[in-house]
Amino acid sequence: MVNQQAQMGAGNVVSRRKPLWQRPDKWLAGYLFVGPAVILLIVFSIISIGISLYLSFFDYDIISRGGPFVGLGNYREALFKDELFWTALLNTALYALGVVPGITIFAFLLAFAGHRVMYGKGVFRTIYFLPSITPLVVISLVWVWLYSPQGMFNQMLARIGVSGPNWLMEPQTSLISVIIMSIWVHVGYYVVIYLAGLADIPRDFYDAAKVDGANTWQEIIYITVPLLRNVTLFVTVTLAIGAFQVFTQIYIMTLGGPGSATTSMQLLIFRQGFQYFRMGYASALSWLLFAVIFVLVAIQLRTTRSEQIF
Image (cartoon, helix red, strand yellow):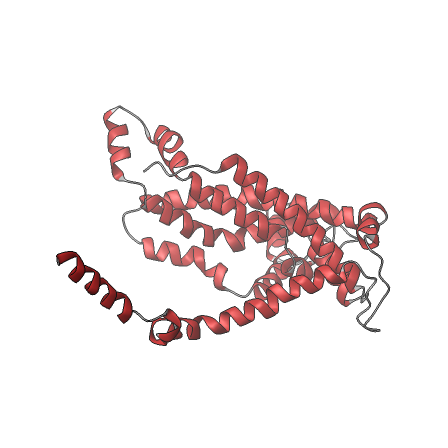
């Protein structure tokens, strides 16, 4: 009798449950909020990525809106015939080698200093974060003036009797100048990330280290740096991806010059697609750049990832 009543009760519970599609109040609001973002993602990301892959196998011209099928011809041209491709790839790699370690080191040091101050932490974060929210075009134009022959940097050098170079117009200094500007612009964003990571480290580790007689340097080496390993991984991965896609500051400050001294992969893709109208070749260059970034990030994740230990 008891089992029969229990089965009847369970049957009533099951019968009262409606399928999810019959309960729009449970999901309709969520889909309405997410819908516009999903549509934008599908149209401007997923579909665009598929179209670019399709076009990379054609000698497609956006003026004539067509072109013959060339298979892997665009890829062979980039890898074996176009010397500018390798120049742009080398410039982009050198830019990344300067920007990624530079921003990571300076962001950590500034965050560590800001984390230890007693007063004015909000002002500290605001000052360093301001360049990150300023339009990059505006900042690039300001730095063009700073680097000009009559700019502030050369005026400061002239006061100590040094004749400054034409920073953006000489092959030896142009790429370094862009790297310095990029470090200054982006370091504040990663300072905030490191500050959040430092605030998340339990104080117990430092108290135990002080009991054992550790000094500040030993605390940094054996506590702070290891416990920020996941934060550093995030910082380096995002920086590497962004560095290999550098475009705005190079386009505004140097236009890839002098010669091809600062031509990056994104600038080369832009020129091939929208100046020479070789959209198929530009699409192939984009996929080659994606392959480089994918391999680089995979290596980073493989070699530096770690499990959280606290």
